[in-house]
Length: 139
Image 1: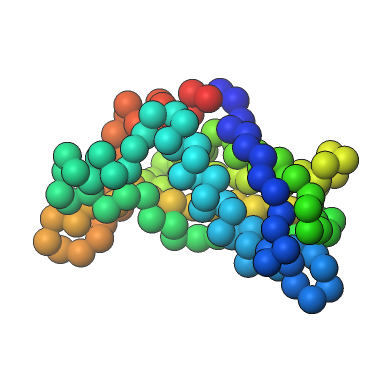
Image 2: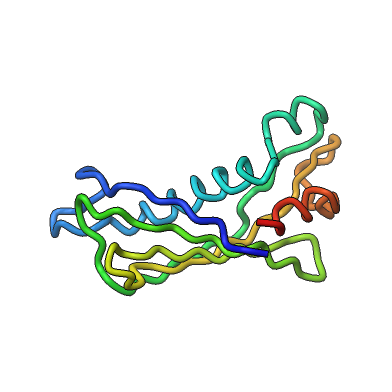
């Protein structure tokens, strides 16, 4: 199992008046990174939804983010996502780290997600299919 890694440029509109990344963008980047990771590991939510009308994706149920050093306009951040940590229940955790160009930690966060289905009784957390869990954990 290995981390998924991607890089992206901090744009002017990602920054607040102090010239540092506005905190909410890290939450957005965690979601974007999750999508990039799933697609890179062969999990296509659009295709899964087309195959199964009850599938509702992998909704976010909890999120946190801590800030360690400021990221600024024109920085190229490295976003690392550790393989999912599957608990005893129906949820799983993803740990995110955002590294500055000099290698310092800018922010770190965690998402808790579920595998969602709706069979007429509202959204329910169900166990993730083993083949999907294996793909996400592979790296």
